[in-house]
Length: 200
Image (cartoon, rainbow, N blue to C red; front, side, top):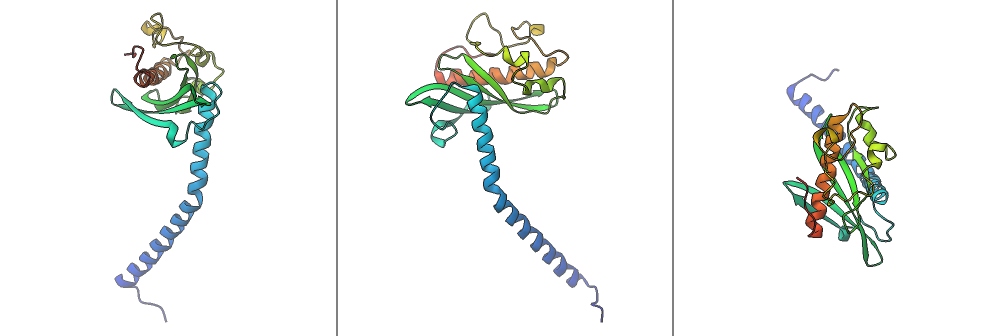
C-alpha cells in the first residue's frame, strides 16, 4: 500500500534529508579542518622564508605575530629572529586595486627598512600579463630586492606616474596595485619600527 503524500510526510522527509546532509558536512569539516589549517600555516611559513633573512624561530607562532592598522588597513606582521636578534619582518599586506581584484603580498624587511624580497600570496590577475607578479624571478619582482623605500631618491610608483618602478609591459594597473601593496607594507614597517617616513 502506497504511503499517502501529505505536507506532514514531506516535512519529515525534508527534515531527515537536511539532518543527514548537515551531519555529513559537519563530519567532513571536522576531518579536513586540521589539514587545511596545517596547509595554510605551511604556505605562510614558506612565504615568510622567501622574503626575510635566515631565521631559527617560528615567525608564524602567535607570540611572533601581530596585527597593525595603518590608514584604515590591517596588516599582519611576522617577526623573524636568529636567537634573540630580530633579523627581519615579514609583512602581509593587501590592495584592492588590482586589475582583477585583491592582491595579497608578503614583503620582507631587514631591521633598517631594506626590502629583502617580496612574494605574492594571492591574486587574480591576467595570465601571461599581470600574473607575472607571481613569478619571483620576473624582472618586475627582482627590482624591489635591496631597495630601501626610505631612500629619498626612491618613489613607490611606476615610472609612468613619476615613480621609480619599471611596470610590467601591458599591465600598468597590476604594477600600480603591486606598488600600492608593497607601499602599504612599508607604512606598517615604519609604524612598528618607529622610524622612517611613511609613503603616501
